[in-house]
Length: 98
Image 1: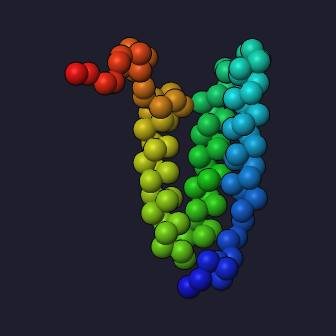
Image 2 (image 1 turned 90 degrees about the vertical axis):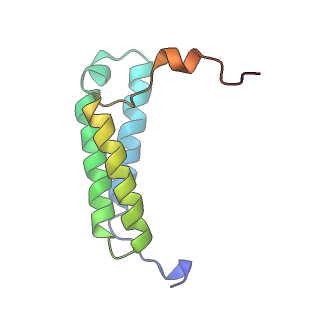
């Protein structure tokens, strides 16, 4: 199968998910409290939209792997309240040592 033979279905789901997440993040940065307050619900909706897009295109093996990886990432983020479990202390630590 060639790249140009791929006919993705329901790609609008991924576009809506991207726009929803981007707008939510921008509103949160601008200090809109409701965007921050409902970020967990919005993030869950974004993951559902992406999962549906992957599901409708499951005939492509590569997208199955991408969908599986995205699902595992979503699970970790949803368990952690809608955010990646990153330690702020570890981020500030210098990485290179001699």
